[in-house]
Length: 205
Image (cartoon, rainbow, N blue to C red):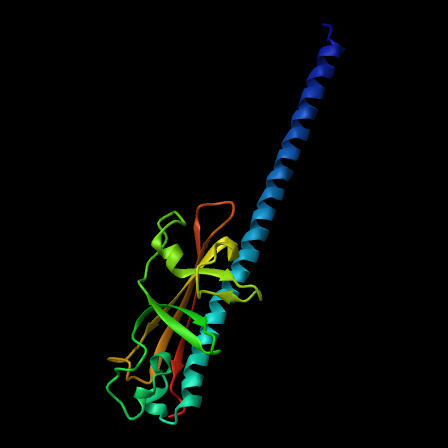
Protein backbone atom coordinates (compact mmCIF):
# COMPACT_ATOMS: atom_id res chain seq x y z
CA UNK A 1 0.00 0.00 0.00
CA UNK A 2 1.35 3.38 -0.96
CA UNK A 3 0.94 6.49 1.17
CA UNK A 4 0.84 10.00 -0.20
CA UNK A 5 3.54 12.02 1.52
CA UNK A 6 1.92 15.15 0.13
CA UNK A 7 -1.45 14.34 1.74
CA UNK A 8 0.21 13.48 5.02
CA UNK A 9 2.11 16.76 5.01
CA UNK A 10 -1.11 18.70 4.41
CA UNK A 11 -2.85 16.93 7.32
CA UNK A 12 0.10 17.56 9.60
CA UNK A 13 0.14 21.24 8.62
CA UNK A 14 -3.60 21.55 9.33
CA UNK A 15 -3.17 19.91 12.76
CA UNK A 16 -0.25 22.19 13.61
CA UNK A 17 -2.23 25.21 12.42
CA UNK A 18 -5.22 24.22 14.56
CA UNK A 19 -2.97 23.84 17.61
CA UNK A 20 -1.43 27.26 16.97
CA UNK A 21 -4.83 28.93 16.46
CA UNK A 22 -6.23 27.29 19.60
CA UNK A 23 -3.24 28.47 21.59
CA UNK A 24 -3.46 32.03 20.25
CA UNK A 25 -7.21 32.23 20.92
CA UNK A 26 -6.72 30.88 24.44
CA UNK A 27 -3.92 33.34 25.18
CA UNK A 28 -6.01 36.23 23.79
CA UNK A 29 -8.96 35.21 25.96
CA UNK A 30 -6.74 35.13 29.05
CA UNK A 31 -5.34 38.53 28.08
CA UNK A 32 -8.80 40.06 27.72
CA UNK A 33 -9.94 38.55 31.03
CA UNK A 34 -6.86 39.88 32.80
CA UNK A 35 -7.50 43.38 31.45
CA UNK A 36 -11.11 43.26 32.61
CA UNK A 37 -10.06 42.00 36.03
CA UNK A 38 -7.49 44.78 36.28
CA UNK A 39 -10.07 47.41 35.33
CA UNK A 40 -12.62 46.00 37.77
CA UNK A 41 -10.04 45.99 40.57
CA UNK A 42 -9.11 49.61 39.88
CA UNK A 43 -12.78 50.61 39.79
CA UNK A 44 -13.49 48.81 43.06
CA UNK A 45 -10.55 50.49 44.78
CA UNK A 46 -11.89 53.87 43.66
CA UNK A 47 -15.39 52.95 44.83
CA UNK A 48 -14.02 52.02 48.26
CA UNK A 49 -12.23 55.37 48.43
CA UNK A 50 -15.45 57.19 47.55
CA UNK A 51 -17.43 55.26 50.15
CA UNK A 52 -14.80 55.66 52.88
CA UNK A 53 -14.49 59.41 52.30
CA UNK A 54 -18.15 59.88 53.16
CA UNK A 55 -17.88 57.76 56.30
CA UNK A 56 -15.09 60.10 57.37
CA UNK A 57 -17.24 63.09 56.43
CA UNK A 58 -20.03 61.90 58.74
CA UNK A 59 -17.50 61.54 61.54
CA UNK A 60 -16.53 65.15 60.92
CA UNK A 61 -20.20 66.22 61.06
CA UNK A 62 -20.45 64.73 64.54
CA UNK A 63 -17.10 66.17 65.64
CA UNK A 64 -17.98 69.63 64.27
CA UNK A 65 -21.19 69.61 66.31
CA UNK A 66 -19.09 68.77 69.36
CA UNK A 67 -16.72 71.66 68.62
CA UNK A 68 -19.49 74.19 68.00
CA UNK A 69 -21.78 73.28 70.90
CA UNK A 70 -21.02 72.47 74.51
CA UNK A 71 -24.29 70.56 74.82
CA UNK A 72 -22.89 67.22 73.70
CA UNK A 73 -25.98 65.28 74.71
CA UNK A 74 -28.44 67.13 72.50
CA UNK A 75 -26.21 68.58 69.78
CA UNK A 76 -23.88 65.76 68.71
CA UNK A 77 -26.13 64.95 65.73
CA UNK A 78 -27.58 68.39 65.05
CA UNK A 79 -28.85 68.71 61.47
CA UNK A 80 -27.03 71.50 59.61
CA UNK A 81 -25.45 72.57 62.91
CA UNK A 82 -28.73 74.01 64.15
CA UNK A 83 -28.13 75.90 67.39
CA UNK A 84 -31.70 75.11 68.40
CA UNK A 85 -30.33 71.79 69.64
CA UNK A 86 -29.04 73.41 72.84
CA UNK A 87 -31.03 72.15 75.84
CA UNK A 88 -33.49 70.61 73.37
CA UNK A 89 -34.10 66.89 73.86
CA UNK A 90 -37.14 66.73 71.57
CA UNK A 91 -35.09 65.51 68.58
CA UNK A 92 -36.55 68.24 66.36
CA UNK A 93 -33.08 69.46 65.38
CA UNK A 94 -31.49 66.02 65.00
CA UNK A 95 -30.44 64.52 61.67
CA UNK A 96 -33.47 62.43 60.63
CA UNK A 97 -33.07 58.82 59.59
CA UNK A 98 -33.05 58.51 55.82
CA UNK A 99 -30.97 58.78 52.64
CA UNK A 100 -28.63 61.68 51.85
CA UNK A 101 -25.90 63.06 49.69
CA UNK A 102 -23.17 65.02 51.44
CA UNK A 103 -20.88 67.79 50.23
CA UNK A 104 -18.61 70.46 51.65
CA UNK A 105 -20.14 73.92 51.57
CA UNK A 106 -18.44 77.28 51.06
CA UNK A 107 -18.16 77.59 54.84
CA UNK A 108 -15.96 74.48 54.91
CA UNK A 109 -18.57 72.40 56.75
CA UNK A 110 -20.06 69.16 55.48
CA UNK A 111 -23.71 69.50 54.49
CA UNK A 112 -26.37 66.82 54.14
CA UNK A 113 -29.14 66.94 51.53
CA UNK A 114 -32.04 64.46 51.85
CA UNK A 115 -32.68 62.25 48.82
CA UNK A 116 -35.26 59.59 48.07
CA UNK A 117 -33.51 56.24 48.27
CA UNK A 118 -33.36 54.27 45.03
CA UNK A 119 -31.39 51.81 42.97
CA UNK A 120 -30.27 51.26 39.41
CA UNK A 121 -32.80 50.06 36.86
CA UNK A 122 -30.21 48.97 34.30
CA UNK A 123 -29.80 52.43 32.83
CA UNK A 124 -27.80 55.42 34.02
CA UNK A 125 -30.52 57.77 32.88
CA UNK A 126 -32.76 57.56 35.91
CA UNK A 127 -33.51 59.47 39.08
CA UNK A 128 -31.01 57.49 41.14
CA UNK A 129 -28.11 58.47 38.90
CA UNK A 130 -29.01 62.14 38.76
CA UNK A 131 -29.84 62.26 42.46
CA UNK A 132 -26.76 60.49 43.82
CA UNK A 133 -24.12 61.09 41.13
CA UNK A 134 -20.47 61.57 42.11
CA UNK A 135 -17.95 63.55 40.11
CA UNK A 136 -14.64 65.29 40.57
CA UNK A 137 -14.41 69.02 40.96
CA UNK A 138 -11.63 71.17 39.52
CA UNK A 139 -9.35 70.36 42.46
CA UNK A 140 -9.98 66.64 41.85
CA UNK A 141 -11.90 66.07 45.06
CA UNK A 142 -15.06 63.94 44.96
CA UNK A 143 -18.21 66.00 45.28
CA UNK A 144 -22.01 65.79 45.06
CA UNK A 145 -22.78 69.48 45.40
CA UNK A 146 -24.18 70.05 41.89
CA UNK A 147 -24.61 68.63 38.42
CA UNK A 148 -21.59 69.22 36.19
CA UNK A 149 -21.71 66.90 33.22
CA UNK A 150 -18.10 67.68 32.30
CA UNK A 151 -16.94 66.48 35.70
CA UNK A 152 -18.65 63.09 35.59
CA UNK A 153 -16.38 60.12 36.03
CA UNK A 154 -16.00 57.14 33.74
CA UNK A 155 -17.31 54.79 34.90
CA UNK A 156 -20.13 56.76 36.51
CA UNK A 157 -20.40 56.37 40.27
CA UNK A 158 -23.26 57.11 42.62
CA UNK A 159 -23.07 57.38 46.39
CA UNK A 160 -25.85 57.27 48.94
CA UNK A 161 -25.51 57.87 52.67
CA UNK A 162 -28.10 55.96 54.70
CA UNK A 163 -28.61 57.05 58.29
CA UNK A 164 -30.56 55.15 60.91
CA UNK A 165 -30.69 54.88 64.69
CA UNK A 166 -30.64 51.61 66.62
CA UNK A 167 -32.79 53.12 69.38
CA UNK A 168 -36.35 54.35 69.20
CA UNK A 169 -35.38 57.66 67.61
CA UNK A 170 -32.49 60.06 67.05
CA UNK A 171 -32.21 60.69 70.80
CA UNK A 172 -30.29 57.43 71.04
CA UNK A 173 -26.54 57.43 71.67
CA UNK A 174 -25.68 55.75 68.39
CA UNK A 175 -26.10 56.50 64.71
CA UNK A 176 -25.78 53.83 62.01
CA UNK A 177 -24.06 55.05 58.84
CA UNK A 178 -24.04 53.16 55.52
CA UNK A 179 -22.07 54.55 52.59
CA UNK A 180 -23.35 52.85 49.44
CA UNK A 181 -21.46 53.30 46.18
CA UNK A 182 -22.66 51.83 42.89
CA UNK A 183 -21.27 51.90 39.37
CA UNK A 184 -21.46 50.06 36.09
CA UNK A 185 -18.33 48.43 34.70
CA UNK A 186 -17.06 49.83 31.39
CA UNK A 187 -17.31 46.44 29.74
CA UNK A 188 -20.58 45.29 31.26
CA UNK A 189 -24.08 46.48 32.09
CA UNK A 190 -23.78 44.69 35.43
CA UNK A 191 -24.07 47.06 38.39
CA UNK A 192 -21.28 46.80 40.96
CA UNK A 193 -21.75 47.74 44.60
CA UNK A 194 -19.50 48.66 47.50
CA UNK A 195 -21.10 49.18 50.90
CA UNK A 196 -19.27 50.38 54.00
CA UNK A 197 -20.99 50.81 57.34
CA UNK A 198 -20.08 52.05 60.77
CA UNK A 199 -21.71 53.13 64.03
CA UNK A 200 -21.07 56.63 65.34
CA UNK A 201 -21.45 57.04 69.08
CA UNK A 202 -21.85 60.09 71.26
CA UNK A 203 -19.01 58.98 73.49
CA UNK A 204 -18.12 62.50 74.68
CA UNK A 205 -21.29 62.93 76.69
